[in-house]
Structure formats: C-alpha cells, structure tokens
Length: 251
Image 1 (cartoon, rainbow, N blue to C red):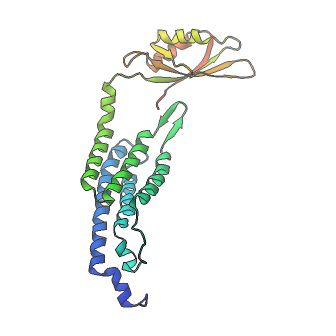
Image 2: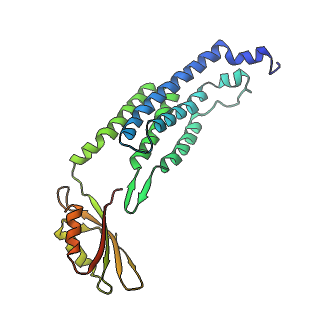
Image 3: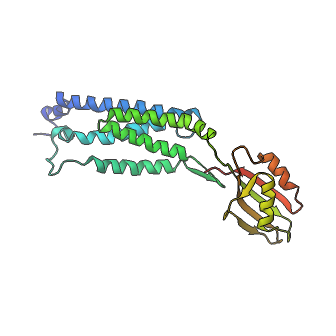
C-alpha cells in the first residue's frame, strides 16, 4: 500500500485508532491532575519544583507507559509483527532512571545542611503515580497521590510532635597557639544543652597558627539546647574564641 495514499493515512484515524488515542488521552489527563495535586504542596511552600514540574513528570511517565499496552495500533497498525510481546517493566526502568536525574537536580548542599530531599523523593513518587496510571491501576494511583500529599502536608507536623534532637553546625576560630582540646569544647557545649557529635570535627590552620574547627553539636532533647543567638553569646565569652559561625545542620 502506498504510504502517502488516503487509505494508508486513514488507518491512523480509523475508529479503533481514535478510541485508543482517546483512552491514552484520558490516562494522560488523569495523570496530570494527580501530579498537580502532589505538586501543589511543594508550590505552596515556594519550592523550585512546583505544580508544573510534578504534573509534567506524572503525565510523561503515564505516556511512556500506556502506549506499551497497545502495540497493535503502533504506526497505524502497520508495524512489523513482534516475536515477543513488549515488556512494560523495561520502559518503567528507563523512566525511573531518567526521573532520578531530575530529582538529583533539586538536592542542594550548603555547609552541613542538605535541602531538597523531600522534593526529590516526591518527584520520584509522582513518576510512580504516572506509571500506575499508565498500566491502568487507577485506584492505586489515586491512593498513592493521596498518601503522598497527606505525608508532605502533615508529615512535618507529626515530626514536630515526636521526640527529636536538632543539630547545629559550628565553626570556631581560635587565638593563634591557644586552641583548646576536644574535651574543653565539649564542656562548653554541655553548659548550653548540646553535646559534641563524635567524629564530626575537622580542623584547619592558617599561616599565623590560628586553628579553625568545624563540627556538629547535637541538642540533648527537643526542648533543650540554647537558641542560636544565646549559644553564640555563650561561646563568645571564652577568650580563646576570636570568631564563630553557627547554622542549623539539616539533612
């Protein structure tokens, strides 16, 4: 059959082909809505990956999965017969790998703080939602959407009520030749409600002999440990300390 003939081109718009395209369209629309629901929480909190990112990831994941289920309609039904049926799991593997790179792009590390882990994980979940829609597990996709949205919206509130120990990244610079030992610095922190995290110390020295310590201090409990301004004032009282920097160490 001539590939430019009206009959050949018409196979792409036959009734069965249009019905399959309509099914694919409905799957993509549903995946887009579910992705937008998951992404709204990130958008509401001003994250870089918002509703559009989640909607696109979820919809594209569904598109790359759902088409595998209709090999008989590929290329207008003129594709060469396959010796083996298509394997959706191989498509899913490629989708998850590609979305993994997108998730890695939103993870940021600044000093001892790491941000973006929740956003990266939720992008990966959005990918899984799209895959579930693509293979026709609509109820599971809706449930995963609800669980992801609830976890991101109220998971932090649950964390705030559970026992925890917050950490602080500390940088101390000392008078040349007067750096204290580890036990002495640990004693300073204990008076402020913190303990020196074992194995977290790194030391740098400049040409003048001034030592600079970087370490993590962990509070004894949720309601223990001085706030950053108070801790800074307490550490500045020690004559060996010439300069300091404090920041919450999130990971």
